[in-house]
Image 1 (tube, helix red, strand yellow):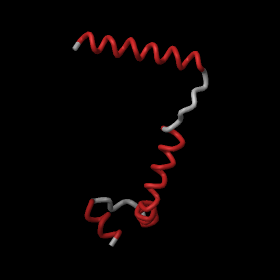
Image 2 (tube, one colour):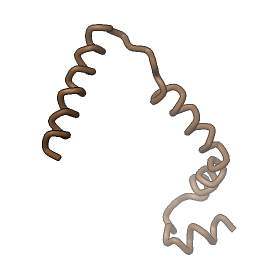
Image 3 (spheres, helix red, strand yellow):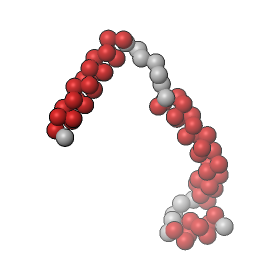
Image 4 (cartoon, helix red, strand yellow):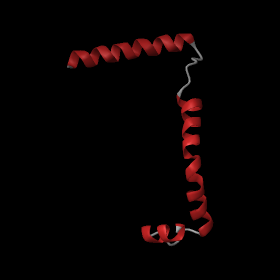
Length: 70
């Protein structure tokens, strides 16, 4: 079934090992997505308090400029 699927999509050159590796990895994609969100995106810690305050000030000014244009 996997071979027919890849052949139907036109991927005749992909070796069988890679075909089965792609299909076999599909059940783990949600786990990898959760890992990425937990470790890479959802990081509430700031390394430098001064840098955090400067960023918030710049974001506030940019937001005020956006509101002024609207």
